[in-house]
Image 1 (tube, helix red, strand yellow):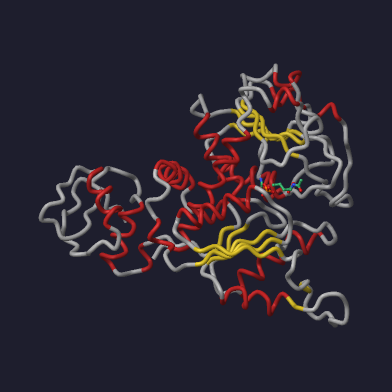
Image 2: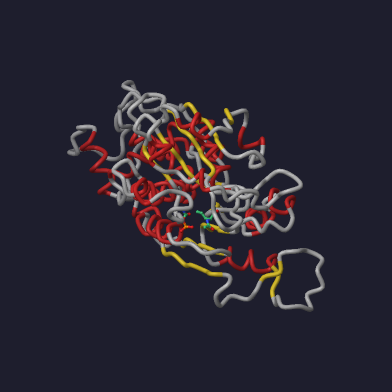
Length: 386
Ligand code: AN0
Ligand code: CP
C-alpha cells in the first residue's frame, strides 16, 4: 500500500500519536501546520513505498497487521524485504537515530553469544538503547551452564543443560533475541543447516536475528552495503571480494553474506580466491569468480578482504593456503580505480592487509564498523514495530 502520495487525505485518521516529538518532527518536515490538527497525517511525499511513520499510519488506519512489515527473523538478505528501501530507510534513520526511542519502552533485547565479539556486542547493544530498549547480554561460555546442543544425547558428561530448555527460558525474559553461533567445522551439514539459530527461531517464541551464525553474518553485510552506498562514486561500482591469508580456520559466514547482499545490489560483483576456496553456490549465485587476484582488482571501486576456510568437500573447514602474495598491499591497490578498502574487522595486519593500505585515506573500515549500529537498529526496529 502506498499512502505517501500527494492525493492522500489529510487528517482523516483520528489517531493520537503516542510520541509527540516524532509527530512534530514529521509534521514539521512536511510543513503541515500543527494547529487544530487531531492526529497524524501521511507525509505527502511521492515515494515508491511508505516511510516509517506512514507504515504506522497504514497499520492504524486499517487495524491490520498485514499492512505493516514486522520482521520475525533475520538470517539473510531476503528477510529484509525490499533491499533498496531498507538501505534508504537505514540511511534516513542514521540522521535521526533517537527518533524511535518510544518503540522500545519496556521491551528487552537479549543478546546470546556462543563466540567472542567486540563490534557486534557493542553496536547491537547501542542499537537497542537507541530504540529505548533494555538490553541483556549472555555469554554462554562465561558463567552460563554449558549447553548440550544435540538431541538424543545421554547427558552424563560436561554439559548440565540442554539448549531445548534453555532457549524457551531465554525467550521468556525478552522480546527480541540476537544469537551469535559460529560454524564449528565438525559437521558440514550441522553448520549449513544452521542448527543452532534455527532452534532459537523455532523454540524461543520471539523474533530472532543473527549476530553471525554458521553460514551468514547478515548484520555485517547490511552495514557493508550501507557503507558502499555512502562512499560510491559510480552509479554501479565494481566491488571485489578477495580471499586473504590467515593462520586460523575462519568461517565462511562473512563472505557468504557479503556475496548474498552484493548479488542483490546494483554493483558489478567479482569474487577472487585461490583454487579450492570456492564458496557455496547458494551464496555465489553465478557471480563472476576470477582466480587471478590482480586481474580481479583492475578498475575496482571497492576491495573487500576476508579470509575463510575451505567450503568444498573433502576440505570443509581446512586451511589450504597461507600464501602472503594474496595479502592486500599497495601492489594490488595500484591497479584499482583508487578503490576503498573494506574489512569487517577484526583484521590481522600484514596477513590480510598491509599497514599502509589499512591506514590509507582509502580505507573505510572504521565507518564500516560504525554502520553496524545502523544495520542492527534497522533490524531490531522492524522486529519491535507494532
Ligand atoms: C570471525 C569470522 O571470520 O567469522 C568474525 C568476523 C566478524 N573472525 C574471527 O574469528 C577472527
Ligand atoms: N565484524 C564483527 O562482527 O566484529 P565482532 O566479531 O567483533 O563482533
